[in-house]
Length: 100
Image (cartoon, rainbow, N blue to C red; front, top):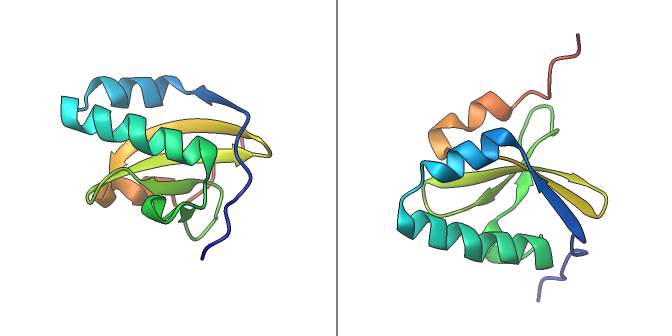
């Protein structure tokens, strides 16, 4: 049996995340509520298939469903929800934020 990861005790949503949620269909929003609850309680839950996005490994992705992903940043026990994208758009998160 897979061991659970520590739960997050707080979270925040970016404007980008909120905008992405607005564009979801009702069934996707229902899936999102379920997966977010799982992510907050046990980030290592098998249904999330959570992992770092390569090559920079700054952002993480978790499965929302077969084709969509939740993009987030774990900061200790705090979770930053960044975006919801289709699997085809994951590449935009393969690099960490630009350092200017």
